[in-house]
Length: 107
Length: 122
Image (cartoon, rainbow over all chains, first blue to last red; front, side, top):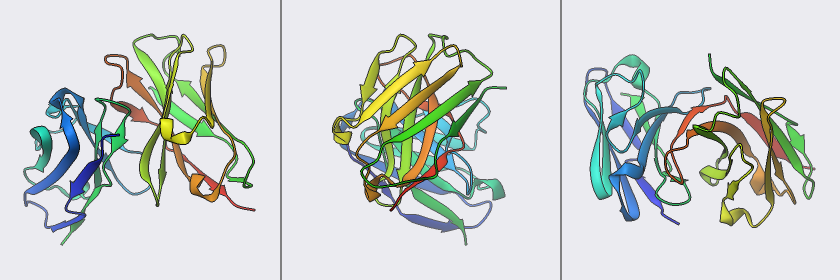
């Protein structure tokens, strides 16, 4: 099983600031097989990114994904009020697994 | 508008069997561009993929669930179902159904249903 470890657990930032979220895999994975989701309170997870860097339909361009090998990053260039949520990475190179999540909270 | 809606009992007893259904609207389950999945979210284990089912009936299950899972599909009702046996408290979770694009063996999930909370307790 590929274990995904996200860091930090919590990120405290202000609107307008830049958020950088990390996802580290226990094995090398092709970037084709890495996705990111956002989950707001009381809502289902929403797909943000697949293939590590391809934005899903309707996702604004302030969300950027990058990385390769075992290290992947989700960057939110300027935080909007609606961006404060929990973010998860997921790999689908083999039986799908998820990271434990990073909470982006308002400072 | 495409939607997924989970339904099932909110409370089940230990050792019993859980049955959940996901009703699909806005597209047909027979659309072979997609397959259908279950995922759960618990405080102890976080997000955990449970399994996938294709319209053909082909299934893939999470091996860590030790053969307790069964997925089925009912195209006439446009719904698919999850059965999980031998429940314990560790099966307490929010259960989500989701759609996946049939591009690779495994894929990302988009969209997800709102989820249904299942509590295992006597």
